[in-house]
Length: 408
Image 1 (cartoon, rainbow, N blue to C red):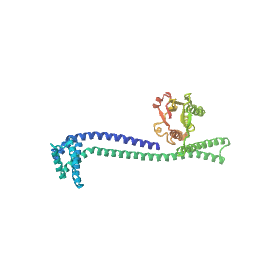
Image 2 (image 1 turned 30 degrees about the horizontal axis):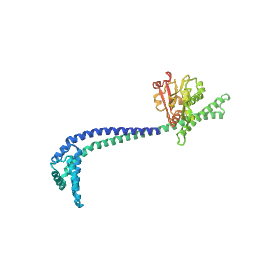
Image 3 (image 1 turned 180 degrees about the horizontal axis):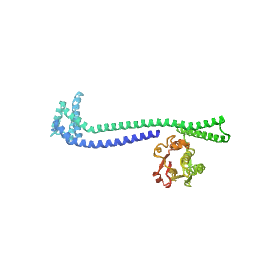
Image 4 (image 1 turned 135 degrees about the vertical axis):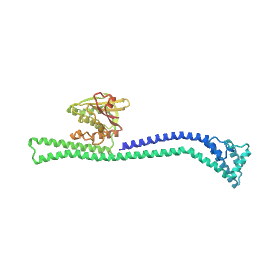
């Protein structure tokens, strides 16, 4: 669940970045067009409409903004300085020169001074100019305002979409949890019912003496099955608890995989299968918990034995791109058995998911693979299932139809 939540957060971050730069690019293009049209058509029209064309000559929004600012500043200076018993002459001269440089048309300095004085005495005549400034500013800001709204709306939609997906996933998680409880009850009740029936038959004395050993063996087998389910369930819960940590050390992964194959060799022979081991002779050291990682490899080999018909060829291979740095180490457990149905592959790493035949025969608990995945994740490793035709690209051998891959 935590892994899926991190994936959703990563997806949201990617969406925000991509949508931000997309909107920014569109806004920049629209802004360039808006500035060009404003400078070419709108500002000259506004200057003529407000009758400032005789005293103002600008070729862009910057010049219009500067002239309006200087005129307002001039009016403010001519009002505030007399109240402070100070002369505004020097400031006015600076502002008048600034106006002349920015496009304020005047034949002489005296005409500029007189025009400014007239505007200062009647500030109301500046209102059309200020209105024009506000209109130009609004038009130039409009692309950013619209872009911001579009960005905010798209982000809100994406967040609602992710929330809906999270809610659906939460409901599915609840359904899987209820199914898991149901499967636990099933896997415990079935052998216990058999044990109770056989024990009652023995206790009632209805079992012939020559068959008592058969009943006792059945009781032992079902009890072992129950113990296996309980042990795996405890291990699964323990790995999921906050207090559990793996103990990493420097280990030779080649030797570890060979030991796992040796441990399972008797089971392979008993089932009539064949095992092909392809492991480099020289050591390859990685940081891992040898006990927990051995469980992963052993479980994959055991699954290949249990869930395939007799006579299946099982291949255990180890490959590494760079032995010097132990980069891209991969352990493959492949087999020539039937491929796993597509409807099962999407859920095969979930607890208590097995094939119908496996569950009916008691060959598997459905906890081995989820347990292995948890161990791999705690190491920072990955595990996946590959089948035809994808398995061919790993060059394991043309006879293999599927393989579990542990990527370290």
